[in-house]
Length: 69
Image 1 (cartoon, one colour):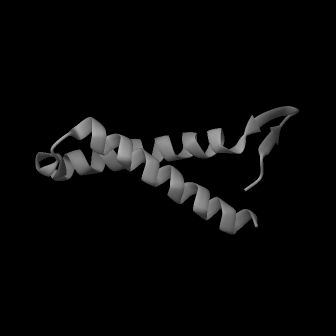
Image 2: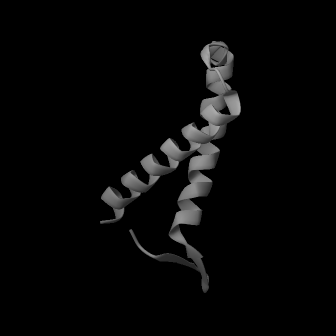
């Protein structure tokens, strides 16, 4: 993983960029799960949402490492 991204002379930590992508993906996944009625089986929804965000950020970083390497 690259340490930072250069966007028009502004250095942004790559983890921040991947976290933003993961957050946007989590918004769509949460809406899909709510529409499907999945959350009625979840004990603690905020805890589940944070865990989902962490999994999605890890997935985005893993995919980015394979694509950019």
